[in-house]
Length: 499
Image 1 (tube, rainbow, N blue to C red):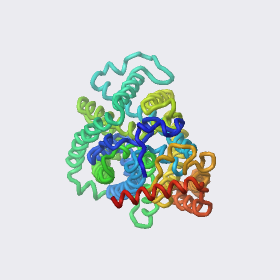
Image 2: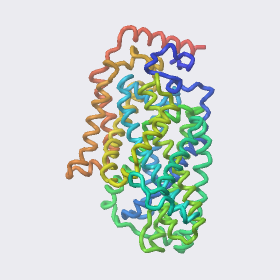
Image 3: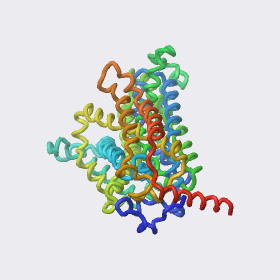
Image 4: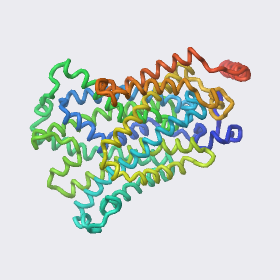
């Protein structure tokens, strides 16, 4: 299939494309194995991930059980990411454009908008959480920082907190100043530098607890296989759920891959390998805190505050906070920038989408959202739970229905193969809706709560199967001109092979 180059933009529908949405030219696909590996280092090696893993220890899992949970979850995640990232690498297209093949050229705006809303709100929340580490560091380095502004406050936040947030929020602009290329350079340093802090924490944990044997001999509350089985599966689903949104928009990154092998190997080294190493350090430190302080401390910032070394704590907090910016950019900033560009391609480029996303995140007033964290997190988790079924539809469409062969030209026209009925493929929406209801019903019906705890697995599996069934039972009508064009393309491919 011919790949559309940016210079051919006049040949496609202007309401469906701009330079940022068209396939990345071969010469601009420069991301190597190490770039994808360092990307995942930045996504994983940070404060929120530490809190998620440490939280499993606090919930009663033994250190070895937590390592098993994360290893299994990361392998499943890696498989889904590599699968959905294949099209991005092969065709050079981003997530909202790839979604057109399954949801329709206009219908793709719906999953893209859902993904964008979740990302924008999380962008603000993560930015505020990271700025809290900045605030602690600034106060430790300069005690007078905490007294700035006196009793002054703005919508519930004092001056030191607001300044810390604006500084942390502003750094995001530097990361994407020159687009994806500047992100590639930043993450090459941000991810690995965290190991300075991790090595120090690991050293303290082993030394203060008199060895790894003492740490890993601590039992969890699930002592038998039967009692641990479902909580273990639910914990695996929970860890996957944290990163499930990236499964959708991984093509936003793999479209810059130098080769398919680079994205597959890079994500393997960066996700299962890095995640397991990070988990080992986290559970070692959290379990050691139980021995040293009498209770497990699953928050790395709280753990650092137990030590009487302000300068060391401040430097560590700043390093961890800067690393948190990487996950915020990758998970919550790149996707909505592309999603907004896909919604209004004639007016919004990736860079404009980036600025609009940052502005929207600022106006979510995240410190107020966190005041009622239970409600906002429930809403976000419900919307996020609907994204799992979308991934199931996309993977089923690309591998089973299309067999990894896309007509790229038709992705950018209202009259091609992916127009379906008025630009919408009802089969994709029906599969997403049915699987989403089944996966999320446990959030509202107490007796079905077990379903909600494994919602990601349910959503992906049911949507995958139901979408294939609907496409087989009621396949889209293909016009004669499309059939004729396919025959010409097949003949062209055969001639290329023969040559």
